[in-house]
Length: 385
Image 1 (spheres, helix red, strand yellow):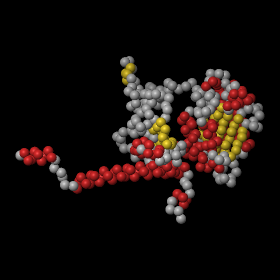
Image 2: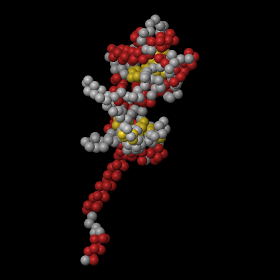
Image 3: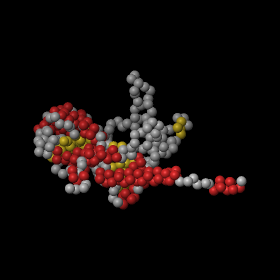
Image 4: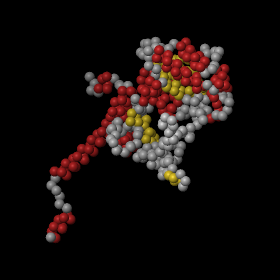
């Protein structure tokens, strides 16, 4: 019998490994009056971004305005509350809010959440389905005229969620919008199509939760809600099982080498640009957020101090991020490579912490039980008397 308990029962899933590690490297419970420490998280991406500074709030002294007084610190990221409304809960609107969202493409925060989702769904890749929606040109013409692309997309998400629930299943769904490069160049306008991953089976031998005609019905109903009728949708949807890796399926759509939506901003085809380039269902969101775990600052500080030795032993990889704002403090990203590598680092950190604590207690015990050494200054003073 193998002496390794992991090999005896088989490797744990990413979900189980993350939850187990979260209890090891979690920060201690904050006590009243404790200072606010920097926050870092462990997530299914197995990457952590952090700054070695104690706090970003104090970065760059705030300039003073003779009329308005001290200005907000550069990295405080706080909004001043407005005068309370009728319910006493109104806040000042964000002055930097754009007239509409989605003009810059998929955001970094959205890309991060999609990667977290697909990494967790990767555990059951044989149970997943990959659904692609490609609308015909006449449907895109009508959506651009009515400016209802966002209505169609939101209706697809809600109907897919509802249909899966009606089958007695939990709707784990995540979707990404892509502008088709060749078609967009040929038609000289943005041509969005949707890539959706959802859990379609309970077991590998089970039937799919939704048949092809049911998925086509979702597309037709969503278009009807968006004001598009009488369109041939026989080739609008294509669904296939995930044979290898769901990350590999979405990798080409999640990279930054996408079709730039900037040339169509302000043109007559701007309504075809989605207002949200990704979406997920509430059960998947809750499941993902359960695996975004806070990380102890002491552990992260220990890792940063020993980053050269850790990287030389291939236990993790470190990268200094190139932030667009030159005033930003130095920010690092650590790739933990795998849960096994992170578990080894947590074990080494605990050993180092226990050794340091034992050494401190040993020195204290030696000082406490050793005879008191008389100070040379006191001896000189006493001899003079």
